[in-house]
Image 1 (cartoon, rainbow, N blue to C red):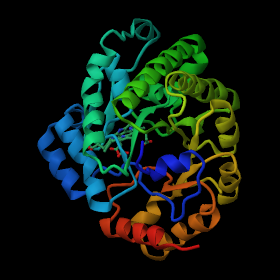
Image 2 (cartoon, rainbow, N blue to C red; image 1 turned 45 degrees about the vertical axis):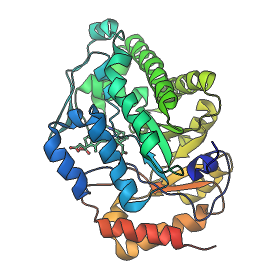
Image 3 (tube, rainbow, N blue to C red; image 1 turned 180 degrees about the vertical axis):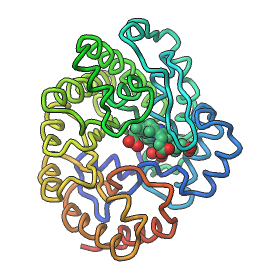
Length: 343
Ligand code: CP3
């Protein structure tokens, strides 16, 4: 790669100021041009599996804001879908699946996995051609635990009680499911890198609901398994781990999984973030609701992050996805502040 991609440089340990910036869920309902495509696309899943439309919505926030990174438009739940589980998204309810039983886990079938995901690989190939050369392309998957929580409950829940209960009642079956998801997720990430992704991110949105032993078994171990398999094929590809809600366990997560960079949720104290940053790049961690509120709340939030973390390897981002209510002018204000900052 001859051209400079700042997000990759930061993940390799370089400190860049002002830091590169992108937002989780940057292609989404806060953008009128996304809502327009979405209206005409049929279902959300149709959009994920249609390379013309998926490329279009991935590029929308890049055209509008010139973010330093672009994240593939898809969803973490295409992995179980490609393994033969049913999946639909209902307006206002999020994902809906038939809950897996112990027997269903035995029957999961990966024979058509890559065939089913071919439209996603095609989207990545086209994105790498169409994106500006300096824009980092990020591929992603869900972490096995987070994906498993939706497979087990069949829908989103506030605390993933169904999956936690399943893990205590059927530990062997859960372990089997997590290992299988880890192996297919690793294969999925490897194909995304082959197709042109520069970086991959592993979303573990529900790692914060686990007790200490379960965190180790359900979050750390399967993610380490993915990292090991991806590195065996692509030793240099940066991997961002995002164990949302991991709190004091961010340290052990980084150490034991071997991820290159850490995505930080907004609850991570900046003193802890700054300590974590001595071990490698961090990404985050503005509360997405500061972006909704705008004004002083937004300015102060941005300033604190830049002050605390600007001297080290930092990718400026939100602490979770942007919400549909966030006004576009606030995104613009955030970018002006980050990009205009001086040390
Ligand atoms: O960040 C991006 O712009 C890339 C695309 C992306 C989506 N989902 C698109 C999406 C990514 C990286 C995801 C990851 C994802 N999906 C996660 C992990 C990150 C997180 O948010 O915690 C999870 C848990 C899911 C599962 C999922 N998908 C849920 C719970 C929902 C419903 C909630 C909601 O916001 O509606 C989705 C739907 C979804 N995924 C949307 C988008 C743009 C909204 C669907 C729509 O446009 O109608």
